[in-house]
Length: 218
Image (tube, rainbow, N blue to C red; front, side, top):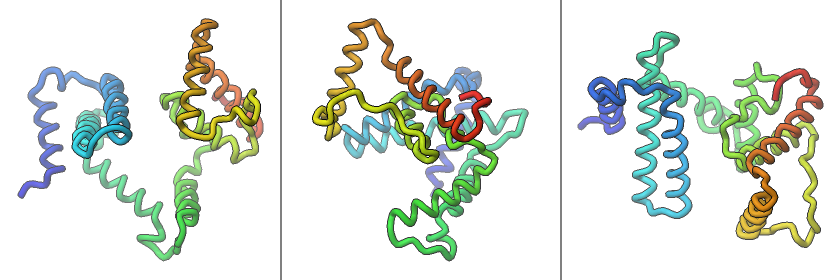
């Protein structure tokens, strides 16, 4: 019986060979599709059925296969889906020494310590805690990531300009509060996403100053 994953990779290769649209596509061309498919996976997780999730994961896998197939034919440092899978396996083995080596982790917190230690060893060339935070992450997700990294070097985010009793204590309340802020921004002609990016840049600049990398771009 044919391995379904191998069959999917071979199907991708045939499409790249025989479909004039697919043959002309580049990594950059695929970015919007990758973002859309990732968003649809999230939607399936949060509001869809198991069948929805299975289908959307398949669509996301197709994007991975597409990028790998494009890369396999690249002139500079080509790689294929086997290289992707091999690199992933090696990385996950390194990051789970309590599973594949002699380390012990009996709680999720201990697992996280081992994971972060392994990850830090892989990324020693990075100089800032902010290195590796993708610029293209959605604004709010990136804000949470940047604030988490900032805490590692003792940099706090801006204080909430609201009374303690008004601070949302549930995701529903938080969602309503965020939506109200966006609505207020519209009334005043402000771009909420751009405002958030500006605030993040200020936090990032403070982090880099604290680290001694003030001359680096954020």
